[in-house]
Structures are given as structure tokens and as C-alpha cells.
Length: 168
Image 1 (cartoon, rainbow, N blue to C red):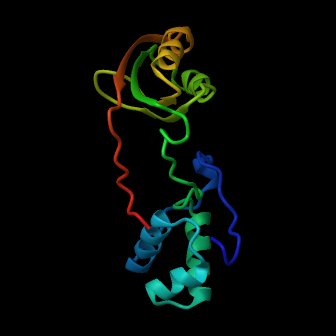
Image 2 (cartoon, helix red, strand yellow; image 1 turned 180 degrees about the vertical axis):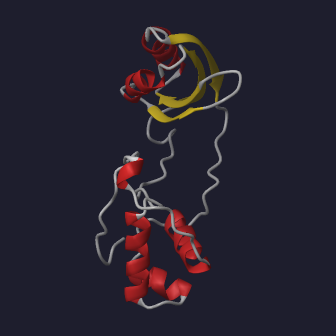
């Protein structure tokens, strides 16, 4: 946001500290769509595009931040141009009830971009970006498999990525 700086809320904020979920109307959804496409859009620009006053847009964006709907603003990165020639999804089977400790260890990994606790044939899905295949190999074999609660891993190389977020 370039007009006014809006406070960002930390991701993973405790649920008991968050207000109850409020329904979103079509203006809220339009604001979210615009900010997803360009997180640096000014409040004035957002207001103009959704046909509300600047004060109304500012209040709505702040409410979306306070409610935890908007968790922050970020940049989309071209991983190859940023020096990460290899990307992979790594699936992990972990010891039952060890998610919290495994999550903390995975957060420390260089190149870890996203992780999710999932149901199915494996327990954790981890997206990593590394310089090259050798770095990926080292990450999996010496860092991830060294975590005591990790029972097994499977590495899926990413050949091509497509960003599904709308372009600005």
C-alpha cells in the first residue's frame, strides 16, 4: 500500500486472539482480488477500482487486516532469476503427534518456501527452492532425513511453475 502504511499481522497468530470470522461482501472480495494482484496498490487506486470512497476502502482494508483475512503483503519471486535453479516438493511421513516439533525444524531449512500438514499417503508437504540439484540432495539427505521424527521422504522435482494469482 503506497498511500498509507497499513499494519501487517503476523501469520499464524493464535486463534484465540483473532476476532470471529465476518462474512465478506462483493466489495471485500474485489479489494482482495486487487491486492492479490498488486499488494503495493494505493488505497486511492483500490477505492477508485471498487467504486467506494478512500475512507471506506481504508477502513475495509484495515478490517480485513484486523480480522486476519489479509495476513500481510509480499512479492512474487521468479526463483530461477533469484538463483534457485531447482525447486521440489518433498513429502514427509513423520512420527504421529510430532507436527509441531517437525514444523519448527523445517522452518529453519534454507530455501523452505511453504509447508502444509496434510492427510493421505504422507503427512507433510514441503516446497523448497535450492541453487541446484546437489544442494537439493544435501538438503534432503543431510538436513531433512536427520530430523529424528521424519520416517521417510519422497522428492518431486518441479519442472515448471505457474502462478495462479492474477497478474497486475
